Amino acid sequence: MGGALPAPGRYPGCMGTANIKFTELHIGSEVQDPDNHPEYVCENCSLLISAECRNDGDRATRGFKVTFKLDNGSEQYEDVPALSPGESHWTYWRHDAIPYGTHHITVDFDARDRVNESDEYDNEYTQEFWVYGGQNAGHTVDFSGEGEDVIQGDMSWATEAGWRQTDVGILFKNPFGGPLAGYQFMVEFISNDGEKTIGTPTVGDFEPDAAGLMQMPNVWLKSGGYVTVSAIPEAGGPAEDAGMMSATREYTLADGATAVTFHVRQKGDTVTRKAANATQAAEKAQVSGSAKVSIFKVVELGGGGGKEWSEQETESEETSWQVYRAFPEMEFVDK
Image (cartoon, rainbow, N blue to C red; front, side, top):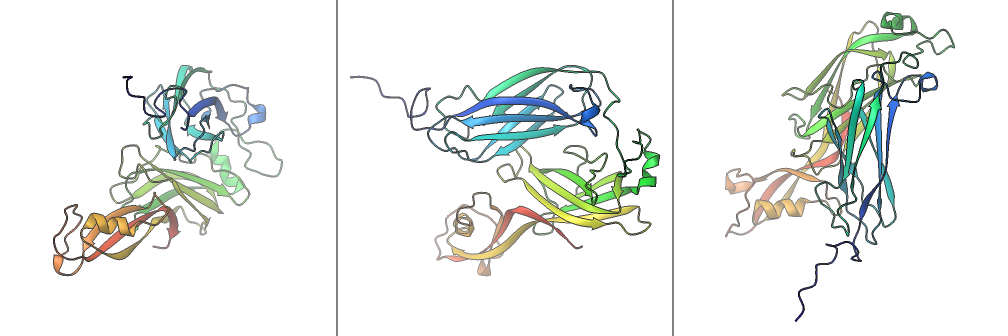
C-alpha cells in the first residue's frame, strides 16, 4: 500500500491554492524639493519604502499582513487586502531619517502564515542599501507660494509666510469613552494651499498617554487646512486583526491661538441579542460579511446580575445580552 498523499497546497507545485510571492522593493526618499536633491538617500532624508507582492496561485487569498524590518530595530506591519489570482499589490512604509552608512531592509509578506500557499519560501526579501552623508540641496521649503526666494532652514522666517508654531493635542477614544488601545497613530496636516506641514508627526514619534491624549508641541501650521489621523493596529495587540482606520477634517486656527485640540473616536454601537451564553450572543451580533467588526464586551441583562463575557454554556433558557461592537472606522467629534 502506498503512503498517504500530502494535503493539497502544502508542497510546491500543488494546484488549487494561493501563492503570495514577493516581486519588487524600492527604497526612496521624501524631500521637500526632489528636483534639486541627488538621486540617492542621504541622512537628512525621510525614507519611503515600497514593496510589491503578487498572488501567483489559482485561488484568491484572504487579507494578510506584510512585515517591514529595518536593521536599527524598527519594525512595521501593514495590511494587504485579499488578492485574486494574478493580482499585485504595493505596500508602503514611511520612516524617519537614519544615519550614514550601510543598512538592510527586510520585507516579509504573510510572515504569520495566515494564507495557505503552494510555496511558503518566496514571500521574503532582504536588501542592503547605503545612506550617504547629509545633503542640504533639496532639503528646503518654499513658504511664500509666490515664487519668492526659497527659505532655507531658519524656521523663524516661516511666520512671515503665515505659518504658526502650534501645540497640537489629539484625544483618541474607543466607542464607549475609554482610550483607544492597541494602535499606533499617524498624523498629517495639509494647508489650504496644499502645503504639507514641516515636522509632521509620523508613527512612533508621539504616543497617547493613559487617557488617550497625544500631545505634539511646536507643530508648524497655517491658519487653515486639513488634518488626517490614521490608526494602525499594533502587532500582538488587542486590535491586531482589525483594519487600519483613518479620518480627515478641516481645521481653522483662531486668531492668536497657540494650541489646538482634536477629538477622535472609533465608531461603534450596542445591540441586544438573546442567547444561551455570551459567546453565542457575540456571534449573533457580528455583522454579516465584516470580519473586522470586533466585540468590545458582552454583558448579561436582567436577572444575571450584570455578568460579563463567559464561554460556559448555561442550562437555563436563552437570556438577553448587551453586546458592545467596535467598527474599523473612526471620526472627528466635538468634545
